[in-house]
Image (tube, rainbow, N blue to C red; front, side, top):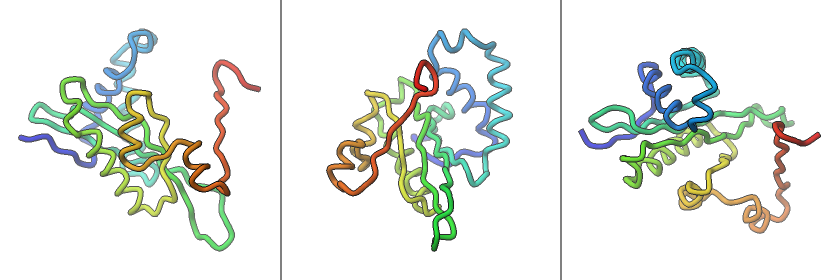
Length: 167
């Protein structure tokens, strides 16, 4: 079987939980027993999979699921004249080391961008690691600074981290 990218199914829950565990630091994994985490993830995934609020792309090889990327739909406050409006948040993009640099991240991102368009989302946001910035820039994502330069009337986005400081 060649590498493929597809939308996740409920049957992918265990492999997705293992990928999430694997992607975290030793310090984070040391905070919780793996079996407890896998159970919590499985419960979360069963609640969110198939809901209008989440979509998951997976990369798969002959050995099983080796990568994942999530799209969370974020509805906005109602606007006059618009029945509904929402934007998307791309989160937890991960591909196992031995399958990286094979285009799987690009393919998963393309699948989620297509899903966002089908859902009528107004825009997609991502907070990438430094190593992943080029993936998103190649797909057309712009930094807040570039976006403001492109459209100076656009209202800038600011973030207040709620852990470790701020108000």
